[in-house]
Amino acid sequence: MHHPSRISRNLLIWLLVAVPLGWGITKSVQKSLPLFGVEPAPAPSAPKK
Image 1 (cartoon, helix red, strand yellow):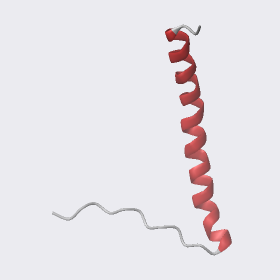
Image 2 (image 1 turned 60 degrees about the vertical axis):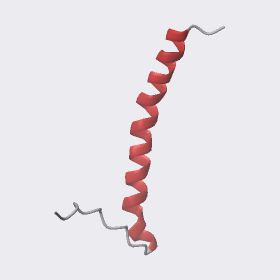
Image 3 (image 1 turned 90 degrees about the horizontal axis):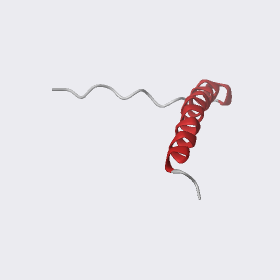
Image 4 (image 1 turned 90 degrees about the vertical axis):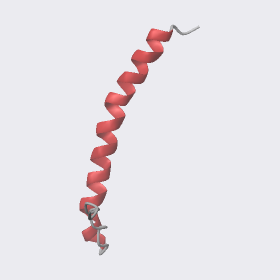
C-alpha cells in the first residue's frame, strides 16, 4: 500500500513538471498560429464599469 505522504510528494513533483510544460506548450502553439494563417484570439479586456 502507498503511504499518503509519498502520494502527496509524487503529486507535487508531477505538478511542478506539468504546469510549466503546459504553459510552454500553450505559448508555443499561440506563437505558431500566424505561421498557419490563423489569427490568435484577442486577449480578454477588463470589464467596463
